Image 1 (cartoon, rainbow, N blue to C red):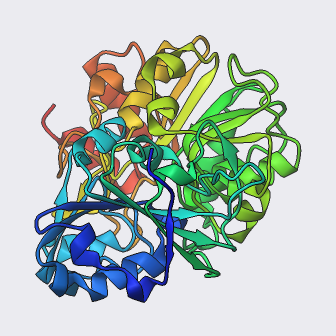
Image 2 (spheres, rainbow, N blue to C red; image 1 turned 180 degrees about the vertical axis):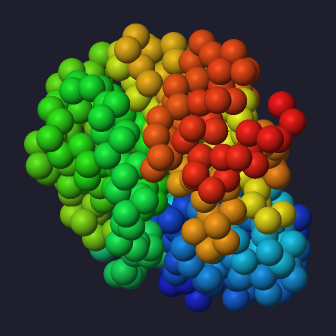
Length: 416
């Protein structure tokens, strides 16, 4: 344990002294990025020299392609602002399951935290992100924390002790929010189909974005839903405040929503603030395969870029650009398949809206992110294909039936 943090201004940080040339710096993703620190580090990147940055889903300009003159960006995902890096050929992807991310980034020379003010006991809540950051706090050589008066104070299985921090920079800075757009009719149809599959009392895991939030909104008539998920967003906050998510019928962590990160906007941040029924936990807990499979009626709902006629799932590459992730869909789907009463679900529109290209394909255009052996239920706006226990011939027919009608003949004519 360190002696205690030194209070600094961001402009007073000696970045070359904290981060050796070729070293690794890591910070939290989405609203957990400490913008005051990352902006100062990028401004000082030439002084530091070449170094590596392990990043998650970035919503700011800290991962701009021009910063790659000194910084080698490493991530598990090409989503959000990371896409610009990927398109410029400046993003190095770790093609790992999400629960391996923290280990793959180690050893960490410099860890940048984004924390709310300390609680009455002197320790710091983790704010909006525990996940891989919490798993790295005790391993990093140097820890610098941005303590932000606007960061929600959340509860969970981990806190940060002052003795784990070397330097603190104080701020009162607005948080970056996930972008949102109103749901379209295709999204609404998919959400309604999935809502019809979910049982009362089920424990949910979901991804992030407009489709998961629409699915949450479609569950408004359900009762006693639970949540154990890598991330949650505004849709979960709305369901919890409406009394639909109670976590009362979970097999473990009863009465508590468990997640690694809150990825939404002001709506979910207000819900998270001081919420004793919300537990922020590290990835080693939220993604533990045995814990997930032991949760009864575990319902995993994830998305994909495309799915082939046998159930192979590509969630990583579209048009030769890395914009998704291996993520944790495979782990969550496998756990849901093993869970008593569980449901492994993949949801996606049947076509790419801008081009009309089918997302149900005869052959994937990218890698196999999730094997067909782990495929469960595939849902588009045109229907539901339950692939569990099906032969390849049966899968082919069911997948064609949920493809866009204008693409079905070509899919049927494709070589098996």
